[in-house]
Amino acid sequence: MSQINGGLRKKNSGGEKMEEVVLEVNGLRKNYGELSVLNGLDFKVKKGEIFGFLGPNGAGKTTTLECLVGLREPDAGEIRIMGFDPQQNPRKLKDLVGIQLQVSALPETIKVEEAINFFSFYHGNGKKENIMENLHLEELKKARYQALSTGQKMRLSLTLAMLHNPSLLILDEPTAGLDVASRRALHGLIRELRERGTTIILSTHDMAEAEALSDRLAILVKGRIRMTGTPREITSTGKGWTKILVKTLGSSLEGKKFPGLLEKEENDGYRVFFTSQVRDGLNMILKVVEAAGDEFVDLRVERPTLEEKFVELTEQAQNVS
Amino acid sequence: MKAFTCHLQFEFFTGLRNKGLLMMYYLMPLGFYALMGTVMSELNPFFRDMAIPSMVAFAILTGTIMGLPTPLVEAREKGIFRNYRVHGVPALNIMLIPAITAGLHLALVALVITFSAPMLFSAPLPENWIQFFLGAFSFLVAGSGLGVLIGVVASNNRISLLLAQLVYIPAMLLGGLMVPVEQLPGFIGGVSRIFPTTYAMEVMRAWGWGEPALGISPAGSILVLISGGILAFALGGYLFSWDQNNTTRRGPSYLAALVLVPYILGAIFL
Image 1 (cartoon, rainbow over the protein chains, first blue to last red):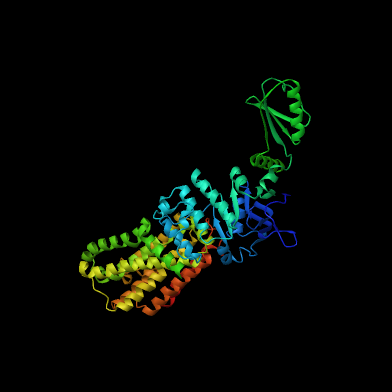
Image 2: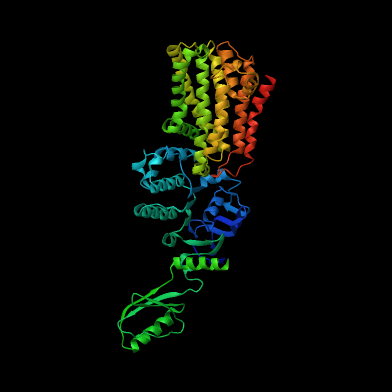
């Protein structure tokens, strides 16, 4: 696993860098019969950060989160959430941790308002009047669970996870099934919660969402964490190739080979190069175009997206196996 | 305590909102009572005399054995239990609260039967109300314990229905609700003693109407019913699983058969 230091840091009085770890996982393993789902996960989540958890289907994301919240018992390894073991201290943790599960439901006939009061009382908070405003549930408060759409159910599930102002919020695919407006509202809410000091673990398939929201990310493939770091750190690791797209009026670049530039097939009249030496690559291209008296129509430099990095890591893992 | 009350209130309304529960708690017992009262009171004089205890027992049997397990199985299968767990809802409440609310609904039905039967079918009222109540209550404890246990161990709704019918049909046919137990042939009469309805009818007939059928001591019948109910809840608590697939539990599901012990002991010793 690659470990890149990054994310939030605090300075103590001596000027040393200090981190407050909210969640620590060491050597986490879980098997379902013969199938090994988690193969020794190690990661830490620091206070106040949004920690993205990315992985393809079957990577073990949901199993990891279920182990974190005590729904599944690990076969080996150690989990500490704010110092507590989820298997040993479930009651303590239910007040510190908010969870939105990917697979969960409520009784069909429960009304939105009833569900909120029901769980509020179990968290010892009493009736909640204003919580429904966060995700626009006011107009649905008399609606029964069975009458809600997928997105509305998700909004309710998220609202329930945040009822007791948890210090750590675990969200498993929170935007699945949400419309654009609700997704934006949720992203805003997640950022707002982070500003208020809530630590968030966000499991998602959505690369753009993970890149936009996460302070740090872990990429999980086949039960192993392949990489952790900030989105920028992750996208600039490995080959670290940057994409250069060039379109000229003339044919000055036709047939030219540039050392250190890997050319991919043309796309919409653009010539596409990949390089780890962006400055040198651009200089070579500029010189050739200038020398030929040609003109640029467009010149773009794009760093690799998280999605490209994700695909690269996933493919590597597949090839290894 | 507020959480418990809020949960209780929600579950009580679920009994009215959920069509399946409404059917098992109200429509089926009252519909059957109306049908039996109309037809059987003309054909069978025994039925008129025993209309109240047998129809109250029928209502409790239907509500607890056929009504209680299904919502528990569905809730586990849909992941509702998982949601409850992460929000700190105790397993005890998940089992106990539906049983209490079932008891409240069935008490309402029992009141309707008890007070309408004399007017509609000339059925005699109980001579001793407290003892009649004790008999019905102890059967409610036994029945709801069995219902919860079926809901806990059944891996899906098909199995739940099968197990419920395994208890429900013989308990109804052989437990003295349709035919007086004393009129059953020897071997079948002996078998009838492993069903809670036999003890419920015995205690209600003996204490409520002064007509014991088998000569079992009413206190003994109550002991069998209450201990059967408590054992069923205890086994339910032990075998309870939060897991959707009902695979991660503390013991094998066949341990649930231990719930028969009080009834077998009752059949041997009472």
